[in-house]
Amino acid sequence: MTHCQLQPKHLILSLNTAMTLAYKIKNFKSAHAFAKRLIEMGPKPEVAQKARKVLAACEKNLSNEMELDYDQHNPFDLCAASYTPIYRGKAVVKDPLSGASYLPEYNGQVCRVTKSTKIGADVVGLRISPIQFR
Image (cartoon, rainbow, N blue to C red; front, side, top):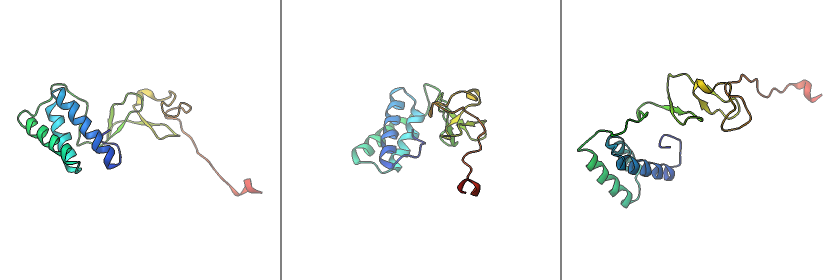
């Protein structure tokens, strides 16, 4: 959620939640990154103070207890089926109606978003010609 194009208020909520959860599971490197981004967003003073505390605590030990499949510096799409990142340069298939991204292993299955289209199908789209209006 922290890399989706959200409104600033919603991004602040997502970053705050991500920072808190990462800190609780001792993923200090991730919590540090979320806290930095949160402070840059200019949240309310109490949220900023909490983020600064987490930032200070994490700087002592920049390591992750659990390894995450997440690279904050590499842009990615989110697979709509597995909710895992599909990093730039990796193979991706799209749903023709919604444009949702999927890992290649989901090619040919029913889209999880529209529940009506086939993932990766080639479609022509709507075609309008003057002959139709005669």
